[in-house]
Length: 131
Image (cartoon, rainbow, N blue to C red; front, side, top):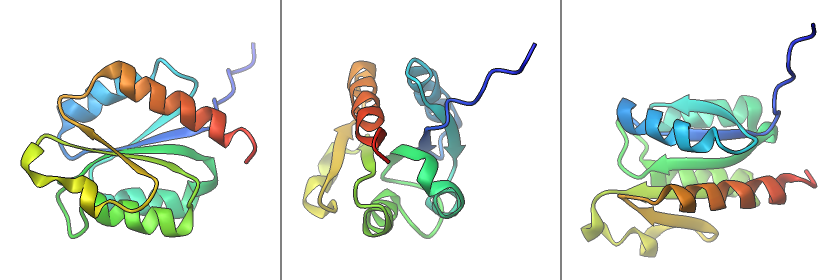
């Protein structure tokens, strides 16, 4: 028997908390996307530079370990891949990050609803269809 082909499109999860990263992965496994996990914005950006054409969406925490945070990552990604679906999340409601987000980036406060993540993923899949 031949091996099942990759789903090709990727959801890139950027979260430095391993448990939250795993939970997000479990949610996103419900849609037709391969999952790539990253602990930092720097590692996520390296993944984008290597496989950006395959990435349909990025789901990233705003607060990350490393020099870059999620907002820095979103800015860089939106400059290079403006049509990519980028969703940022944070558990710190007092940050009011919406004012600092690049255009086109969605903010989803924690605790997020899995249905909202799945809706964003479905939007990413349908948006990526022509690429």
